[in-house]
Image (cartoon, rainbow, N blue to C red; front, side, top):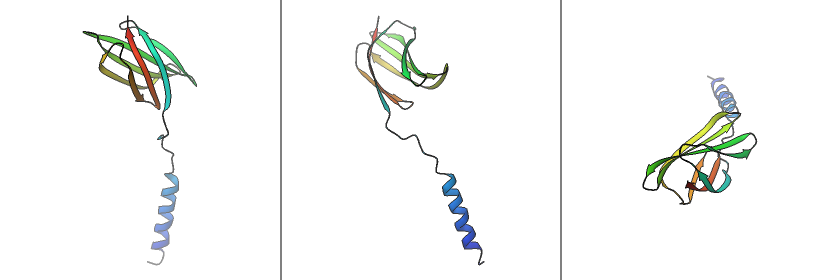
Length: 109
């Protein structure tokens, strides 16, 4: 019984120190892409630096609306993605995912 309390304290201290992994709750990096000229189903690539690329693709839904697929790639592999629909072509849009906050106005040709 005498050794129980110190043993519990030692176990708790080791668990807390082992679980000190820093979370990725930092402020997202702001990226303003401006007006993005897009053709239906054709990817548009924007370099984000550090080997990362933002790939956008628009799929027409009709009546000036589109589905926007957005991926972040690193070394040719997708590391994050999202989609937004329905979106009006030529309307400003903000998307936050994968540690980035994107501002853009998609324009479908």
